[in-house]
Length: 361
Image 1 (cartoon, one colour):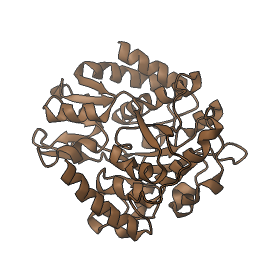
Image 2 (tube, helix red, strand yellow):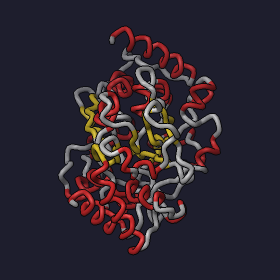
Image 3 (tube, one colour):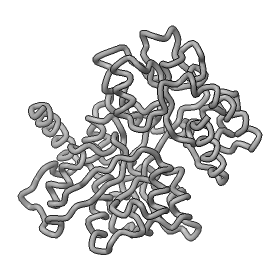
Image 4 (cartoon, rainbow, N blue to C red):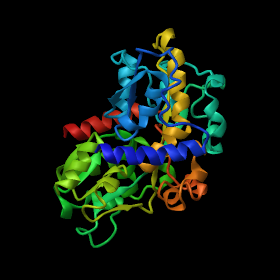
């Protein structure tokens, strides 16, 4: 493991150096953060220890990783105050409005986030992270697509969303425990156009509930962490799931896995950096430094080469191979326009109620 990490570090160091940065230079480590700790609430695919090691080395701070189970649980924890130890949070781009309206995020001082200058225009120009007065509360930092991951040796044809509702595969299927995407997938399965998948009427929601309740006995699980789902693929318990790309990358050299991109609509996602409204003032400077780190070359290089994800910044794009650019969808930036970007609707409380009823059925 140590040798592998050193090889990756050398590779990432070359990429970061190409962007004018040093990966692990601790000789000039500033003293301001010595002994301090930041707790980052994020997904397990976004926050690996090696992804944050350069920041820790440069600042002397410790980044404690607190992995999320769902976006809804993150918002609820912030709203109720039960996550008072979180210093940095991870709202989605299309769900940021809930956090802003809920008053759980601090407004951001963009002058303390110089890395925003290198962001792709689609993320730099978005109003989804602003309130009605134009104040910014979150910064997009990471994006990609969510495919259907499947065992290519178990399926004669590339799965569609309807495959996830097919009794033929009972016990082999998995869905994410997340109301927004799962209900939208049910809508697409029913033939509701992608343009309406996140703006469902009460009647359409009722139809989605019917098929989701019928689907439940077919599922091996509703997965919450991508590590758990990857293990289920590895043990053969799951052969197809609405997923992140992590199981594919982890298992492609060990078994015949593939990623399906349904024609009904590919789900895009974008994660944001945010600071809880409750964060103490003495941690603000360090929190801003970490937010800017997520937009910088070191994090971008690490998560591209190890995690196969792209950040919202162009800072290392030209340093990556053409193959890597293609793998993380930045070879042709027009792809961003083709995704379905999940949007939590104004009646999202109805969606949450429906989802809880499905799981309790």
